[in-house]
Image 1 (tube, rainbow, N blue to C red):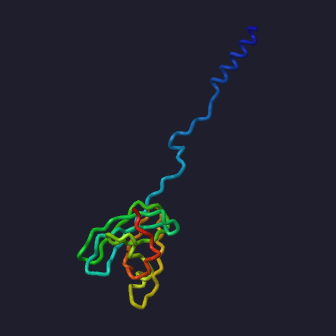
Image 2: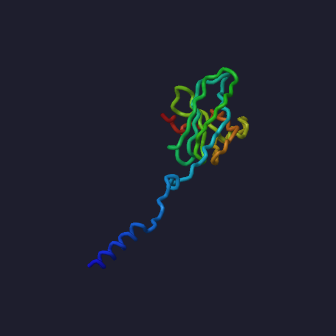
Image 3: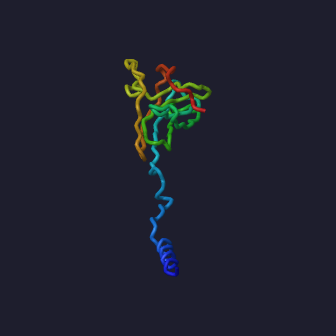
Length: 157
């Protein structure tokens, strides 16, 4: 009997002292690596001497539910104002300008802008703006106020 109790006691002690697999640290359990945010910067123009206050938005090219917006104050001169949209996740975006008090975008970054806004240009196709992690995409001008705006997304609330 003493022998059986001693064997059981030794077995219990061996189990209690056996090495265990280390638990992962909280840092090791994060599900995804941190991705550096991206930035888009450029100018917004308006077909007048100045422009009203505006909201500039970058919408996901394939998912309009993804959007980032900034406000630009009213300007009398110059007719173009700078904007910067920061904190974007990497992806492909389309950019739109909303004049104050207007729920539909009126301006956009399109092939017409890249063509120089000349009368001989007739292509108002949206231009894909691709941003990568940590990258700043510069010189994206929103100045096409002449294209068909019925397909533009409503301004996010």
